[in-house]
Amino acid sequence: MSEGPRIKKLGKIILLSAVLCSFLAGCKKKTESEEDGSQIILGFSQIGAESEWRIRNTESILEAAAQNGIQIIYENARQKQENQLQAIHSFIISQVDVIAFVPIVETGWDNVLQEAKDAGIPVIVVDRMIKTADKSLYAGLIGEDSFSEGKKAAEFLVKKYKTSKPDEPLNILEISGTENSSPAYERARGFRSVIQKEPKFRIIHSESGDFLRSKGHEIGNKIISFNSGLSIGQNPIDIIFSHNDAMTWGVLDALRENNIHATTVTIVTIDGERKSIEALTYGAINCVVECNPNTGPKLCELVKLLHEGKPIPPVTYVDGEVFTEFDSFTKFAGKGF
Ligand code: AHR
Image 1 (cartoon, helix red, strand yellow):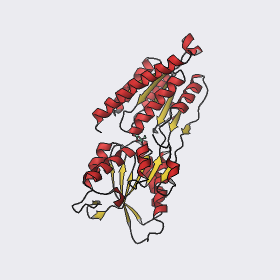
Image 2: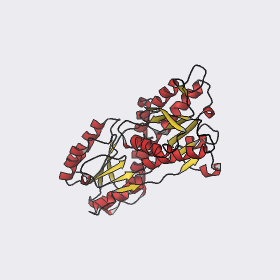
Image 3: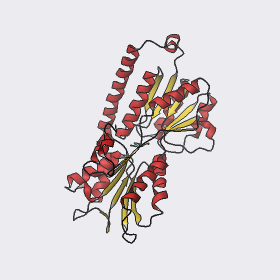
Image 4: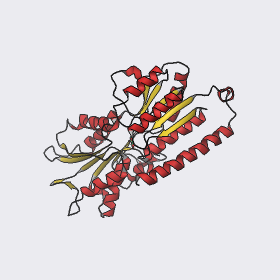
């Protein structure tokens, strides 16, 4: 799906969320805070709608805010850091109680965070990590452990190929996420921390697909060779490690369009969309490392603590499972988003 329809889809989701919020608000009695005007106001800057994961993440936060009686000012940055900086700046001007934001990249946040600190507004970093010299510029992070996700992806490969001979190399194509983003960096690092101990695995090519299905599709088309094998130059590809489901489905689109069976290559993906977990049952995907997008309820707990002037943990991770071709398929029932 291109960015246009995806944004339209998010527009619908936001509209639906707004309807859901007013529905939930209509169903429950007004809270004391809503009555006396002391309701918490949360400014939330989201990256955009680059994947199904991101869309679910936004929904989770909007739903949880509505359920917790937190008023949310939601801004969609449409994949641009400058839009996020502007949004956070406007939250400060509006004197919101708490700011939460998903940093599209790791660096470049210090000035705006200093402004928030000077204004006495606590900030929660959501989903992705940032690099800053002064950790006191934000209250805490809630998100996934991307390093561990990369490790889990590699551990599956070690298990799958445990009987393969050390002198028969296994060629890996890595499709990584947005450059300079923490999940791309940490997933790559976690993956390498495991496979570097197993010389038979060789990453023959690593390329960013920006977490987008369209870019995964482009990369998929590039690796299809004249004899319908998958290769980078002269090197056949045995394994694809994709940093998210959207890019994986882009590759699968390219394979399907060229009548190539996905079972000819081992595919390891991260996120845990329902259709990816289902694809384990028919062999199109071999391992799904879950990255849980449902951060909303926990984020709201943290927002409330900060509003009460209480500290929050520096890091709160949401747990994720691993689903593989070795599992009994009954494990997959009801999993995914
Ligand atoms: O930051 C989390 C990553 O961003 C998810 O894996 C991906 O799907 C999203 O776009």
